[in-house]
Image 1: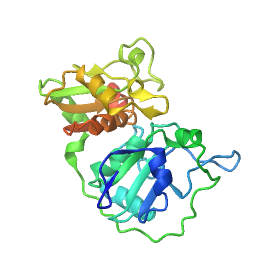
Image 2: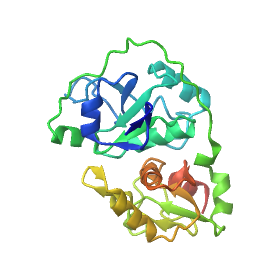
Image 3: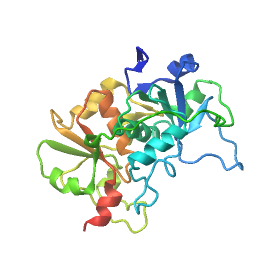
Image 4: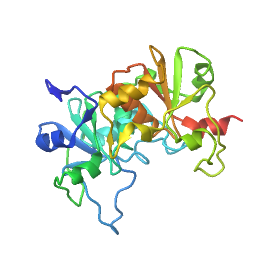
Length: 274
């Protein structure tokens, strides 16, 4: 999994983390949506630091959920987590593979690549009977020296989508369920219309999972091959930019490199168009 201290895969197994948890420079990030308010017991992988997507790593002033943060915000919040330019970052969540790919993609979109998702997350870790703790690590670390460098090719905005959807060398893949993509069930957000981005295709993120984990590389490659991708540029979308990152992670793991996430996804597109 490592070559000269650098991760060679965007995904690591729970057994690898268990064996390497004392590795120098390792930072473990918990990316679940919410942590305990003290009224309920939660479990964490030892040494975890909380990566608060909703509050610290999203533009909370935006009218759309989970909006991409500014470079300054991202860099500052990452530094507050004690992350340095040479840290080795492993990120997990409490659903398996759900929130954590968003964190992986955020780091990559800000120019940091020594980061990987824990396949299966906390559920798989517990399934293997590895130790958990009831509290996050105490924030007594020094402020990190992480420097963010924006990678614009990894993010797509609303103003790009109209033109992209007409180009033959682009393929837009939507991670929502088939019933939502086909407008058979309403969107979960109140007031948001049903619909799809023109010329997009459906790849439900759930199809890429085997229980709590991403499927094998062979199985993922077989799934992507059905979309006749060839050398197309891939744009991933979903409801609000979270599960699109699951497809992005899966695609990258099987060597598709021309990838981008439409950050606003259907929540933005469906609101701003008719």
